[in-house]
Length: 462
Image 1 (cartoon, rainbow, N blue to C red):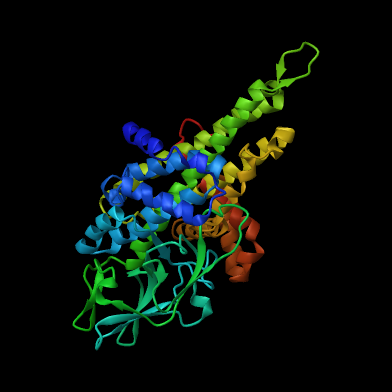
Image 2 (cartoon, rainbow, N blue to C red; image 1 turned 90 degrees about the horizontal axis):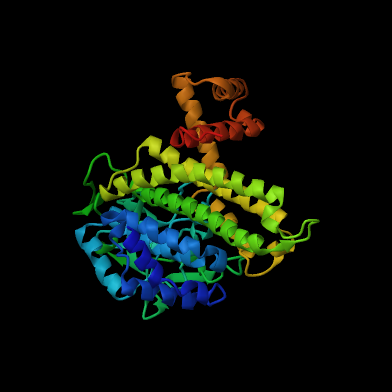
């Protein structure tokens, strides 16, 4: 893996030089070249998932210089787009990824809708209706609320995986994935409209689009039908017990894991460059020769931050290893791993935000200067809401813990006491009690997260 990481770093060494002030089309062209150069195959997400995580880690090292744009573009291409084809596609659809890569074809992932964003769960109102007479699917957004929203790479992608509610004989069959041409010779196909989401505080080298579909006809082969499809006009479940939405959700688990890892790399990189500066910044002192790094509060912050990041990095290592095993076997993560992914996503980002903010407060005017990495701190804010809002994930952690506690009132100390208190409040106050006790809800999530991080660090609990 060290050889691959070195090769991938060499293949992307120009990215910090290009910077983040380039037009999104130039950034898209750079990814096309990376695809065709082929240090990482689109199918490596299943065949060698460790390479995908390693490659994303390298790109995260550049984030203090270039922001999140290219890293997000990369993971959209390899995880959300190609990963969904790998997870849901038949053998021919997966095999077609090789030609797409050779041609430098870019893809996007159309899931999130205007009225179904990070605070609403995986709600899909876009429809794709099977027409037996035409032997085709009709893709359509019934209203503006179903327009796909914040679609990364949406203004430059040639192809798209669209998640839509499949309808057969008037009956909805739930969200399914469809692989379609989004553009032909650079022009959007008829019935597709894409609009720029507008200027952002960071990552403007990444195109984010609102995409709508108005009665777009798709060929029969568009449905990613490894697990379910349409045969002789009937909906057929090819593999019992496997939900398409579960396999789509697999992409979110992988995405959450790489996002979490990227924030930890960002924090480490920011501290490293700031420490290099502080180690050489002379300060006045009666004895002379004092550097900024020797100021006691900075010395303490370095040590404390190293300890905090190391604890979360230990969890990241465990999660990545378990997730790689699932990816290799096309296996859906079990409930325990799903919980660990959620904890990692929240804990890594919140820890990185906290330690980077503390560092900014201690470095004075240096933290105000362009090119230091501090101007890219919205990178962390971007990560906080991508692939699952942190607050929603925390509420899920508490809900799951409370359900487990109701079945078996186990646990010790404050966590068990808090579950009992919240459970009693819900029993007497109904659903409104959840909102009334929001601080307790998030408090239980914090305790669950600390416990899971400690389990990955049995010898290093704070």
